[in-house]
Length: 189
Image (cartoon, rainbow, N blue to C red; front, side, top):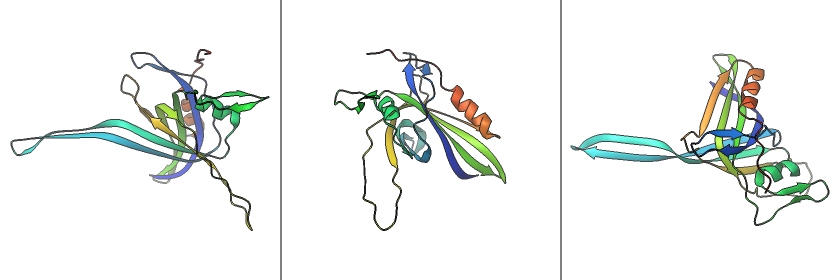
């Protein structure tokens, strides 16, 4: 299997019941996908008894996801980061703002034994933080700059932290990914 593409970033505001049941707001596209890096930290424990390994455990602890996007649309960034936005004032950031937890997914194009397939990867609970900005003046040649935004991956109360499924068509993968989101509307503060 070789990964040959990345498309269709989607996120939706998470509403989590106490038992870990998750519902998500409507799917939103932050921007076109440039890159995605997911790094997972695991708990690791071993128990030795009678001079030998008797038990071992490796389980999910937390993670980070870094999403590279081609455009930092102000309205979308306000939703993703918990800021206010109006067409008149643009985005207004406050130190009192709190980013919501979201579900975050994407479609990865792959080739397996010469045949294309499309893998949906979905993170159940992510909280994104403010992106750092790096800007440069135009020199003798043009260099494109993009935005990277990092989020913390957590598990739902029921332990779920990720889903993945492979499809033979891109349209089926997109339909599945969109279907993970719903119409939950968070209450207005």
